[in-house]
Length: 356
Image (cartoon, rainbow, N blue to C red):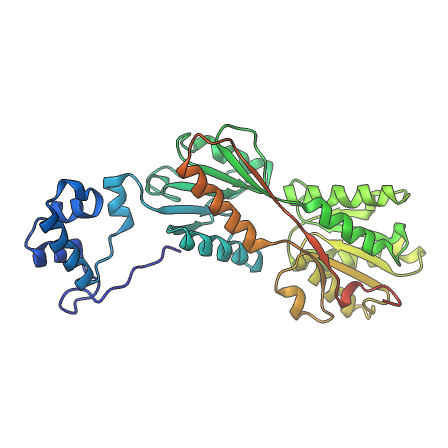
């Protein structure tokens, strides 16, 4: 979302152009450009006259046009696997606010796809990397790592969700393990260990992997002999949560065992699917089913019962990536830095144990 400058323009014709400024000040377009980009080579009187016209007309330089001269567009690219849903909108909100605070424009793209046939666009298409000063990119699966091979080594890059030991590559990570472990311990308090499940997204997804590994480690640390069916992997979608729960209801484990079950979902959408399927089956929540989501998006507060969830500071992740990118642009030789943001369980109605 590149912020579009606003101005009254010359003679009510809309946004003023550099040509309007040149004509009004009775100078060449090149002189206006020099005043904007290299004022030392222009006489003080001429520079002052041009600045006065710029102010009067409300002219705002086009960052792309300036970039052709200064080689600094003040535009950053924020590349995500997708831009649909609360998760990504919060990332974008945080990134855009920080870019604005630091004096940058933000170009948002969903070109960073993880499909097996994904290829990085060239300079003339897609992300148009030749027009930006730096790139913050979220990579969620190993298959998308190859996208970095086509990025110019001189372009400042910040990675989100993956740590890569490479010169000049700063990383912003979420501490998935701490939040997942806290949520698992919460479910174990009031639910038998062999009745606690993790239902995540794609198995190769970095977040899914970190959350499921922390879930299993916490169960084993509590002395639980974990069965293979206590972890399941699918898609970060509501429908997958419904599919998993309906499949579990018909499983031998569900038919033979007694007592409530606990579910740690890989995100809030999967958790919502589990809640919907339980409601359809007439299963009381949290009496016989305790559910915890992940990310703590707005969804967690508007569903009924309200959804417990592991809070991920999504807006802060976006903001941290832009800060790191701006710092890299200002000092290309600085040592790579890894920013780790904390997670924390927020307990609501969907997972409260008896007596809580």
